[in-house]
Image (tube, rainbow, N blue to C red; front, side, top):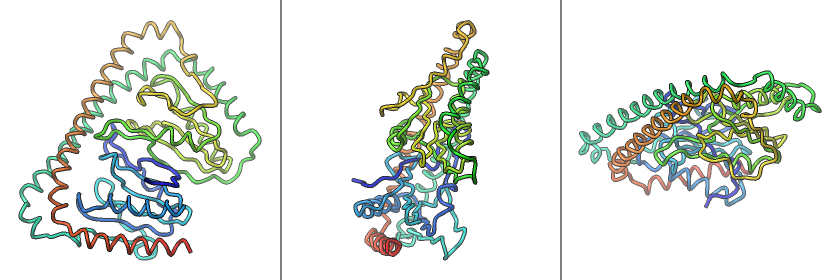
Length: 363
């Protein structure tokens, strides 16, 4: 069991724009970054889990960076208070050293496999690798198709919104949150996904974000009602006031936001979109209902088209998730070949060396 969690999130996602990376803003301020290389099944996620468990049990807070291609696997850990991170640097989130030797360090777990055994299965490994790549291409094409229906839905909704009233509400909320704080140098921005479309379905850490806040605004409303724009305006003013902001991008359309967190103020804004399947479960302080700014007449007029667009979106998105499941099935078979070729005793020694190196940062 992992203790002393600072945060959990996805640094990359399977989106309507393809694989979308938000890694950089979470890694650029570290003092030490260990980059793991090696094929599937070489033990990267297991190694990361073991290191996370070791130090969180000692009370060192950790950020867990989960894999959008397998929600049960880790892609990285950050011990931000000591400035250390360990990440999987392989495709699709390839990470190369920016400052080799002084900040970045590469560890190649491919050094510990039996290459002769892999060569015996060369034909199958190439087949499954190419099949996996093709299935991901199909996933992204299907998500792009789903986005067309979502864009139509947004347009139909936006047509009926009273935007002047929304702007008035937004300005009042901004004064409520920030009126006592002067402008100063902008704080750091962290860009992340609060959720992801994975082979296990749509996974979200929205409740986790709310747990870290003392004041929560849950913004309800369908696509196109301005939820993301509201969050962006609050985040922009927070930065103007000198506060660090955690941006949580939409797992389907990363141009939009699922929410933000301003840690220093203990304030978060969460988008309770129907795409999230449920309203976040944690107790909330305030609920903002965007649908109150919708014209009933225009909504009634557009309702048949809205319903059709919603149904088409959900059906196409569900199809994309099914293809993602196929991706994992193929990937699991690929992992088997590499796992059988690995010398995990040597990988265990690598883990011990990493533990010793991180330990030095605690002194």
